[in-house]
Image (cartoon, rainbow, N blue to C red; front, side, top):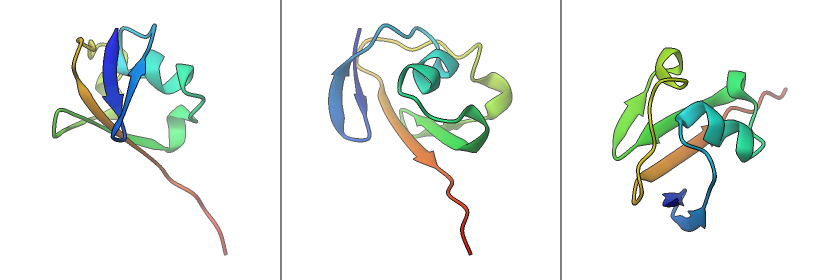
Length: 65
């Protein structure tokens, strides 16, 4: 499936938001996801299906001091 991730077009095997997060190597506990301009709550990552042409924005939280 072809989607946009953070502005870049990608071919991905993932079919859900949670599978995409894992496929891209993000820590599922430290990522926020927006799908087609709508925030996807973490509780819905496993059940939110991706569709060809989706626009996904991923933000990973980084701690520091």
